[in-house]
Length: 529
Image (cartoon, rainbow, N blue to C red):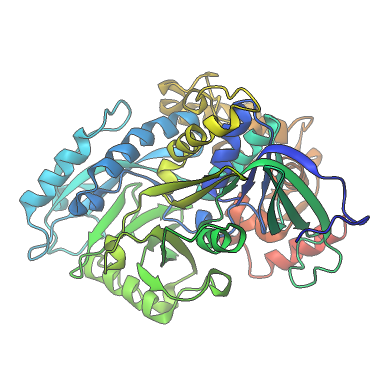
């Protein structure tokens, strides 16, 4: 039971309390705030600190889901693919994929038919369709083994997943939402037809073990959205009276990063005899990202350690070695990451065939305020999921406030207004022109550094560099390529608090810097707190 004591503030009142700061949670918070609802979001760690920063970094329809007849999911994702490219043209860019044909695996005609469907399930304005490719006559064959002679090329898109989460949270905040990171929901209680939530907010971001100094917050909400990802079923069972009707399957996906295995900007999709597929994606200009695995995780979410296993490394290296001439081993792995994906249990015995679609379960009771549980989903369909969530919540909320119609399909995410304030094609097609223009606008700064900022922040680069006229005015260079002006922006505008937030989620600089970079930055931050 929630105790209202003198040490706890007066309750913060809102229409919607969102629990979870992954892509689904921030997407719902943004959508709700833009519809005129008062929103509070709490996340127990940093934004995108779990599954939403451990993806394959793709906005895609999910070609392999066609094998499981998930035509509705693939169509929905393909429809979202180009819409998201227009909403965040600085973060999401076209990516061409090469699928080498291997005798003895999926027949060539099946691949051709699947790619034909993939091209035609949804309208395409920005992305070219599938074409056949003789690998020995094309640059994409460079680096592949000589026995691979034929393949197909098709289109999807790449995304900086963690930054996409942050942009949605920023936009939600700009539209009136309150975003609380490092804030855990300790208790939920139905009271007088509303929800009373007790939140515990860490005062020191780097210390998750000692909660004696946590700030206690009370929230009085008309409804709650449980978008806690891997913890969704646990929260449903703990804080609601209804029996859990939706079972979850937790599937671990891991990736490795090695030095570049090819020099062009296309990606690969490789088949494996076990039926799985693995991507090899150009990453951060100097590296190749290889993944993902699909391994059933049997433990509790709180017990999950985001570390790749030796077996997974061997699996990914062996698959890479089946296709690339340059052979790799565990010694070549420069970085790895792993996440646990909460998937809806649809009865499939094999983890790779479990549906990646989402399900929304709204609990309505005459005596209890509504609570919506978000199960499953993928980063590509987060905006549609948020729209569906608000459609479900609009009716119970309409008794207390008029809920405005859907709007997110036509509103750019922060920094996306490269040449137009509307989500149109020119922002996508002229992304390179924008980066070049920024380099010309700030000629006193290194081109590669300005290009990184322009690609990561879009037009927000001008806010970061506001008042800067030379390299001295950028402030201290705390780490190579990381100046005070960028750090200050990330803290004040993007909810960053620690070196890990900055080096691995807001940027990917950690991959380019020395092993002690994180401790150096944390010490620098501590000296200015």
